[in-house]
Image 1 (tube, rainbow, N blue to C red):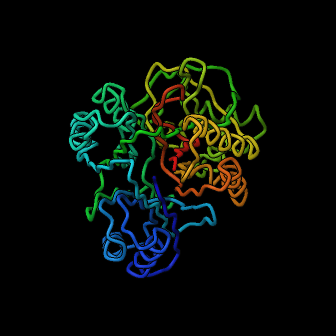
Image 2 (image 1 turned 180 degrees about the vertical axis):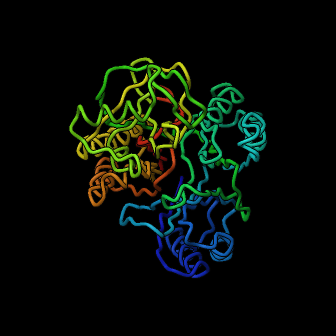
Image 3 (image 1 turned 45 degrees about the horizontal axis):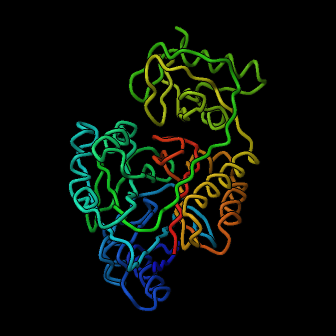
Length: 388
């Protein structure tokens, strides 16, 4: 049997916030310490003090987590807050791992990350999953997912996202026990004999003709069809009757993202700003030579996508009752939707029924699961459902 606690706080003081989270966890778990604790926290907190207080209060066997850009649970959502999911199970085995130096050598970071995984050497459990949280500002997130898939021979389903920093895009952190680190990724390995469900959906539709990426440098889009990237977006704004300001392009970019053609489906990339040379800084890597389109979305389709991702995850737990879910969605989605972001959260809860969930606004979402759109995403709802 698996038990779970979902907790939230917006207290100002880091130690007080951590103590409250831990007390709430113990209350929901009938005084028993969790086997694993997953923590998402705004950078307003002193992470060391926050984590120490949580650990002292509820004594989890493992802690993983990351900084965030908006936090939410079944009952509330906000910014400059913290939330957590605590798990205690007689049927699951949890192991934490960390990989350092992501920006310099993502392959080495991936190898270090899975070094603690026990599912690679034991066959006592049928299902292998891993929550992966990465410093997306270090880059190479797509490469990290690919390397983890190769190193585990595709036997793990992956879910998670990129750490945030309340939309500052300055520095993000991941948590591994008491360790608070940038330029790294952490994972929580979950081995079980019941399936975990992972669902993915984004709800964006095609809004332009296809274009070839003629030049790109990692997270910088230089040209499309041999035309300066910023000129392409300016032309699209004019054709569609939208305002575009090079000095303040984010309001436009939040409603017009890049879709990389992945064989009929489109993996999304959020543009963030315009460089002096007319190139576009993006939230994740864009490969040179890829076919892309500009994409559009509505608040209704975004909420429908969140519900679809949840429903897809539920179908994969093979009739078991859901106990708790983890939900990852992009900070760009929250910024674009404003107050209407609550509709998306409500859509997840409606699909889950009585089960609780928690999650955070990410700098990219991670998903790799059978029959799902796999890789590193932007503006995409990713839901993991954990059964009782």
